Length: 294
Length: 234
Ligand SMILES: Nc1ncnc2c1ncn2[C@@H]1O[C@H](COP(=O)(O)OP(=O)(O)OP(=O)(O)O)[C@@H](O)[C@H]1O
Ligand SMILES: [Mg+2]
Image 1 (spheres, rainbow over the protein chains, first blue to last red):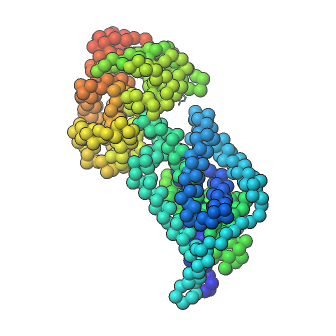
Image 2 (image 1 turned 135 degrees about the vertical axis):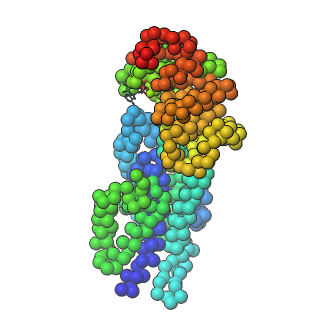
């Protein structure tokens, strides 16, 4: 029983990290209506960038964010500009969620994964950072975790707040929301619709890069790592409501708790299966997700 | 200032508008009238870069606007109030106006423009923090017109601004249109309310099945027997 209770904070912390990854997907979908299935590999790519910075220059991933987040922003910006946009234009006539874009992102996911496999091989790479070595305990010593995991949770919250702020409190955000609501009208108002798409895509991928810095502190970098995170973040976003920023975070926490608590009560495998069942139930019962509108 | 020459446009290979030529001069109100589905909105979509031209060209103050994307056409000073308002429903009235004036140039006199708009439509000031989607039809039309005015149009194009408005509001809307023209903005207007439109129009075009079948001064067309029969039920 005690172990079960202790699994809850563990699950929340894990869920915060999941949620942070899902945020990127949610932001991109919310604006462009594109589900970026390359999300997982983009996370993986940023983890490798941190790994390279750490191995070669001893730069802690937290510091590395200064370089990697802007790089990943530009990467996302370019992917939308040179790959997504032409497909949207071609399908523009009637569709709002072009299927060719979805298929392209799936192909892109694999291309990126095999590119990193080619360069780095399939081995698991971990780094020993300061934060991962610091153990945090409650006063009674019942609950222990590492500072890096706590930072991951906080980073998820900060990231969600930052994105919320950009979208709701800035001029750029107002324009991007206008594009999301009615892109024809936004164009007629003088807003460059595809530039807004690129910025949203860039922001989503940059958000991933921030999560990557937190994850590498206690996880590994490996070319396949994105697959699991990609699928999970997709489920989390559907659970929370596609396009909803708090939905992504809360969806992540629900997932994290189901997984860790489930692992205590039943087995890890059963818990993971349970989380997929939960996803299917939500999709059938409330297709807009817990926080989705319309 | 606006010259549309032999414009052809349509959807997915189906041509709707054939060889349409129209012209709008400085400080003019120019009207386009015609029955439902003859291709009036299609023409406006083609001018404002929402659909590709299938032929002809669009010129504005000597510059070629043909096939520019919507945001570039807008930045040249040609601003459309689209059919059915097309507001950003989840943004507040104030945010809708901000998006209408979001280009670098238009941000400069955003405040003065808002003051002018609140003078013209005082109710919008009260509603400024309300989500546009929750407004009444008449109020939404005011927001749509205001949002376009925030973009400092040289030419304001309006697609059925009186659609869905109560009679008293229709009269107000036509007064507002005259005011806008008197302040120096040219207007190209598509309207179902043929009587009122021709009364204020300097020039009008009648479109049938995608081609211009008649053109003339608004006051002259009002006296035309065929036109009276077809559009005014007289
Ligand atoms: N997006 C579209 N795709 C295909 N056909 C369209 C599309 N929009 C309009 N049409 C067709 O083009 C024709 C002209 O439509 P348009 O909207 O230009 O008419 P309109 O003159 O503005 O009519 P109304 O007075 O009813 O607004 C119609 O037959 C319509 O069905
Ligand atoms: Mg129309």
